[in-house]
Image 1 (cartoon, rainbow, N blue to C red):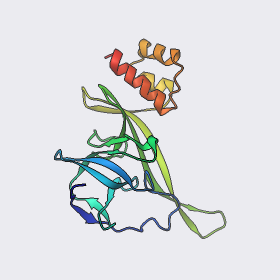
Image 2: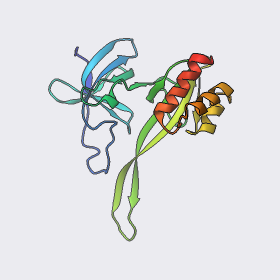
Image 3: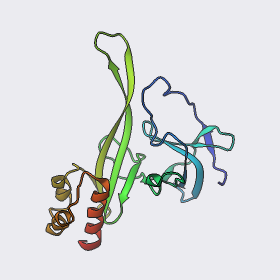
Length: 202
């Protein structure tokens, strides 16, 4: 890995909280792209889904934050194929409490780009008849489509009715959905539908 400038991070802020703030608990290898177009391979990267921050481990094992803004990162796991090629980008129009810096996982690209945003938050809960307050990390996931032509982003409900409304109730897309018995609840089948729509109906 080439030298990357970073600032030291304070760690340990999640020690008294139940759950993990990270996409993956273990350090993972990744390719990152900075806003200025520079691309680097990082041997140890974590994505904090509470702070929407990327963390890397330097050669001395110290957790660092990137100084330059990162616009894209893609995991390259040697041990788990399900992590390979998971690509995340930011810079999309602001929606649903996010910012331009919010990272979205890119599931399918084309005129209609399929995006998934998973983020975490800390929720305080008090047990019945107890003065103890428990802090738990909860995860929220939303799905969006981004139209590259008019630069608009829309959230949709992850079911057949929701996705067909986004696809302008295309009869061809609906036929493809039914003929191939796609289950929109599955990311893999949702990706197939959007890919078909981009390749055949645009």
